[in-house]
Length: 188
Length: 188
Image 1: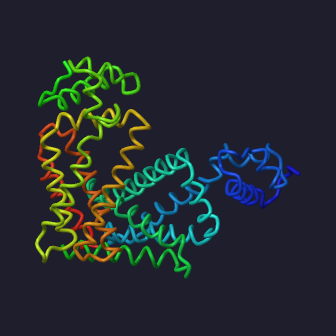
Image 2: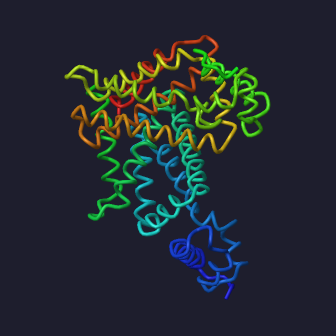
Image 3: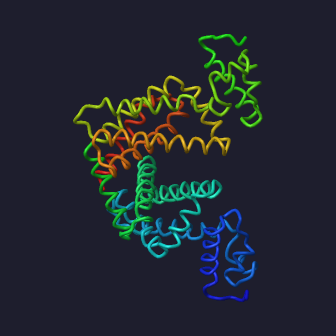
């Protein structure tokens, strides 16, 4: 108990999500999460600042990988094709953790505090994408608008993906939504 | 005092905003708003359910007028040109009340409770615009995406308009932003 194990983070996340789902986020304590995972509170705090951060772990990495995809796009890439590359990076992260992400989604939706935190993370992500587009030479207004189109498509695709009984890949849903967005914009 | 006056609503709104700005939203009572306006609490409650609703009065009308603009668009109108018409309707509402809207914006930004209420109103507006587009024969996905492009442009334009020292009309900023959005989408 409590000694370092390679899978401690994953076990803590699984234990936390199971407990949040069973008895509610507010009613669950860190001690209970650690116990369910067969670890100590001390070990919990080695991985997470508090019980909320269990749900937001990975959002930094998601942001970094979306930004890296924009940085790695070809010199000739348009703003929207860089957004497409960032969404592909998001797709890879989501697919790795479909069960976690779906369960997490329902827990976040159950709490005002968590929803607020989620909105802050979304706006931080949009700001990071905007900055990455600017660094690629996209002008200020276009960078802001393209980043917001990106978050629009990401949310749209996420909602369809997370409950899809056919388990259509996120990447395909997001790419289709981006194509629809272009179609709508060019028709008008 | 307290008898019907044609301008009671406006006076109550002005008094409320002045007090919220001076001493903070949380610290202001309905009694103080009524007193500042030279009216009674009873009169206040004839116009507003509570002190929060002073800040959200007009949002129903904004929604109705945006929806009406979509309904009135020509039969051949594209989804995005209907969004353009809805934004023109919003522009007319905002220009009528530039001072109020600017002050209101700062007050809403100062309170979590108010920001949360604002997010709910925004999502209600997006849902109403989506439904209006569907009623005009736009398919489900396109209606959702176009409505979200509309709220993106509305927020983007609003942020630029509300603090613009040159007082550029909202309509022009929104139309320019919509044109930028099309340009971004067609380039990629």
